[in-house]
Amino acid sequence: MNWEQIVGHSELKNLLKDSISNNRVSHAQLFVGKDGYGTLALALAFAKEILKKENEHSSTKVDSLNHLDLHFSFPVFKANKSGLTGQFFENFREMILTNPYSNNEDWSTILESENKQLSIYVEEIDEINKKFALKSYEGGSKILIVWQADKMNTDAANKFLKFLEEPPKNTYIILTASNANYMLPTILSRTQIVEIPSIKEEDIESFLLTKNEVSAERRKEIVFQAQGNWNAAQKLIKSENTDSDFEEQFIMWVREAFQVKKKPEFLKNIVLWGRRIATWNKEKQMNFLDYCAEMFRLALLQNYGNQSLVYKKIESGGFKWDSFSKFIHGANIEAILEEISAANYHLERNGNTKIIWTDLGIKLSRYIHKKP
Image (cartoon, rainbow, N blue to C red):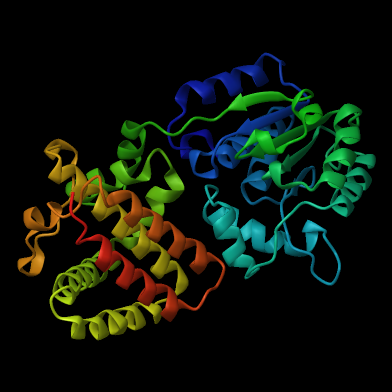
């Protein structure tokens, strides 16, 4: 991972590079921030810079994650009663080489872990102790990157603390975590904490400019929706082709929802609508939920006169955006978003999709008719 491949964070990148050139690198650092902000990407570039300073020829090995003195630990589920990450390393390697901004949801999907809890187990810490008891393969430093260190279970965290307190000579430990509150205070006290903020909007837009397939209008939407998260931005780029599907299904639901109040027989159309969406793959269904939530928020802004914040409207197929927005207000927006969030929760846990979408379609039809 090269520094220039990292989206934004120019000041932070300079700070990290300076710490290496000035020999002021702490033996244990914790990068705290969402994966989409670039915690792992920064950790990889940082590790590469350390090893490159010792041996110029190590760069290509780090780029392919094949450097023998660069080790990784990450959350897994127990397969065949083993909680070692090594059995899943090729999956992890492929994911990170494809997208170093991947998050836990992406990792769970790759592992097809379903409802299994991903964690870093105590036997993994035992394995780390064994690896780092050996001499460096290339005669220089050894580096351990622990991705999502906040997912260590209690036994693993306690044993890792001992490794952290007395690391082998010439060892650097780089931890990443989304939330430091889930980590032992004693581990936090023994690391240099580096806060990774969200990526500035102008930096995301600048990176998007390098992707010729993204139109100026779409670029504005992506920057707004990504909220400083490059992983989210990449998914929004890929979802551009599905927007027409989402728009079509959203319009269909709105029209049926308005009809059903006066003509209950239209309820069967909402049931059919739910069944149609239930045939989509899980990722597309969850993306559609995000799309619906965003359109309701934009309609609320439209209704309350915040025109400058409404970066996208539905105007195809004769849809009357202004008229629709008048039905979204303070008396129903919270309930609408709560129902969408609940549907997302049940989809994540592999609930019955037909029931989830039918239930959501009917409930939202009630809320949309609620008076201010």
